[in-house]
Image 1 (spheres, rainbow, N blue to C red):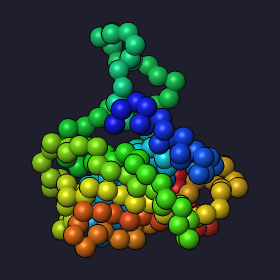
Image 2: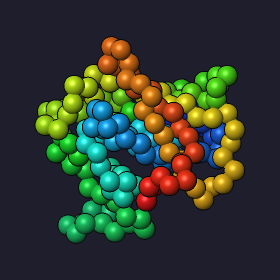
Image 3: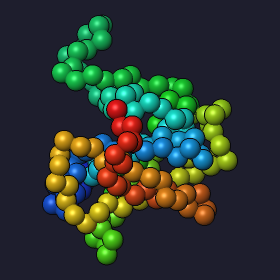
Image 4: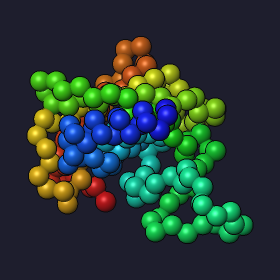
Length: 178
């Protein structure tokens, strides 16, 4: 995806719902043993393992420091290093399009490229290597309280195994979100 293309998509997402812009939502699909991390309007990741929320909230260090150094760079936020372990390395999908539908806003994320790693040994019958897109349905109303994160549910894995459908929702009162 080129730079102008990605800026146009980010602007489209911000115009549709600025309250969710770049907010991360994490959900789990116990049936497939997957963790999903969705940065609304930017990217979505599928991990082939149930990973703690505390780990997924730390961004992957997928960028280089401006100045080359032998020491690990310091950033103003905590990062985690990319992994070559199939169970810890995400399948990456980037925001492609947004549609307003009667039930809310439907955002589509498409696979960036094949991971190039073997399948995770913990994987279930569902093969995330076959997934080409993730669709996320969010409510039509903008979020009022920015201090609370949203939760989500995997509501379906496409019959052909090439898509995943996710629905954003308010977190339940006793739901563990830390």
